[in-house]
Image (cartoon, rainbow, N blue to C red):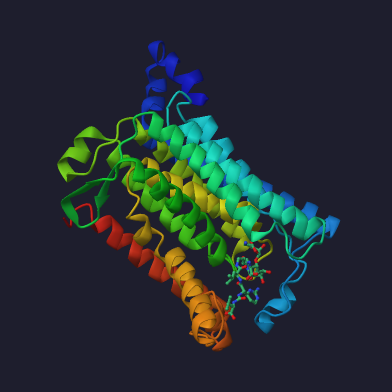
Length: 357
Ligand code: 57M
């Protein structure tokens, strides 16, 4: 919005020229989202606290979690408003990719909200059924991917570390992209089980995409690094920056000991947004590295459930894997910070693929 209002003034005052630069707008989108997220999160903490509608903790979980009962939740609403508000403020709203990305993120947020609403406000322990949740996620992702596909979207998938391997998936790209988006959304949701455990790697992943998206949308840099150039995509750097800011503002309160949880409204939307960002910017496979912690968490659940069903035995003391370390006696902050360290290393390896080809 500011872009449309202020950049035209550069004809009269050259200082407004700065609004054409993606880097400038990304930095201020990050700061705007950070401030909005800080203000809104503290409002949610007060409001939800006074309404006494906090988290309902499962009784069969690690014993340390019982004391978390009643923690204000659904803080994802604050993050989502900060992310979308700041994006709309700083981005060029005529960009063809911004609306599908924003609508997908908001749509996933609505699904998460429906689930949280049932659990937290209606006090129904089970929330939305897993099947309904998945069906709605698939539907939203399918609509967005179809919109891209029909708009002549490139169905080529590049493989990290191999610059010459470019696979044109044709129509198979549709289920593939839907899988990336829905997988990311659910993997972030599974990770969100310790204070700041999902928020930290979310900041790291969004910051990494900030760089990757900028490179992908910049014809000269993309050519120099031999990255697939996607015209118009550079503008999404601003969305990634707002994602970093919104998550940082939330982490201020979500860090151990958490004063607020994000709820499914936060985890499903941010995860879905990250997945869609990876798809639109043609860095789909790299997401497995950039969001490596989310992948590890999801795989730990898949292995545990498969092993339990097939062999009647557990691989881990409890899934997802962060519960395993809790039951082994690791202190919660130790697990969280160690997972963050792994997330940083994986993100750095992902960035190195820009050169390592
Ligand atoms: C939701 N939600 C947290 C909070 C957060 C298939 C199965 C493995 C799925 C998995 C599952 O349901 N995972 C997704 C995880 C919950 O957090 C709420 O949910 C939102 C995110 N969706 O924002 O609102 C609890 O996590 C803790 N928490 C924090 N700090 C935070 O910043 O401490 C969350 C955020 C909160 C709080 O305690 O209440 C959750 O864990 O429920 N299921 C499981 O994770 C269960 N695992 C399981 O059943 N494993 C089995 C295998 C065979 C399937 C096994 O290993 O035996 C465990 N979850 C819990 N207790 N809580 C089982 C025991």
